[in-house]
Length: 406
Image (cartoon, rainbow, N blue to C red; front, side, top):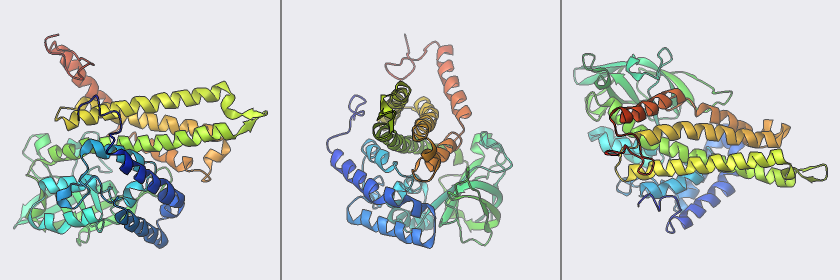
């Protein structure tokens, strides 16, 4: 699919996208508060939603067909991912929260490791987690990470401490980025090793609420954790390369889900402006309120086009590092701003749990930090652009690339 058609919803995707919209709005959104409680009742409710998604043919749509998924092409799936992002629980109910990990394992895991974990990921019977950042290290420079692994008698022995290991409390395994090649250059010194969470040396230290939300972010310790040599993901020293391969499409997925959240906040804001009466007229007739609508529409549309452009470039096999870095920053800011305006329009009600905006607002702020803080992406994008000018090629927005020979 070329970039000229990537910005409109393909006709063959539209019916499935509509089915996902009905599923999320009719079955997931109404029970969000129960799901957020993370009680045993919530677990049963999520299981019911997952069974319903499977029965309706909506399960694991983005996973590859050869590993048991729906097999949707990358660009097609983005339009569905956008809809399921309306709710933070959409990807859990529809079986796509494991997508980044299933891609990683299908490409790089071997033998027992692959056989034990890949199929359960796709079927939703096992949860993954990924451990990169550490509490005592500025993880914006991941070459400083201290968690290490050494090979002893055919086993990896892993030691270290990680945090913001999302879903570790429910996960069957954690993929750990650790230093295995201490003599190698910094970006070749790390590997990814899969650690089953039932290992005796694996311990959850605490769950860390984020801005008051207990969202399943954990601090873990790894003490003389022993796993088979075959639980290495990919090659020794390839940890950063595989992590970036995992994070690139992952950031696209994040941004599309953020667009779904922004769409929902925009819907709530516009409905409030049309229904709330002030001085005998709808609140939406006030010019300052109309400015909220304009600014939010403009930000959502701009971010959406930027994200689809980046996705289209990835789909064509191009280098989209500039585009991905940019949308991570632009998307997180957009999400925060759109939800903030919707909350402002709702007044005191927006601060309560009577609407989803309070929880959405706090979660949106976290988006400017995870998967790399804004500052890192801003610096990396700017450096890449400036280097093009140093080489005399500049940057051509028409091609979204360096303008060689201009």
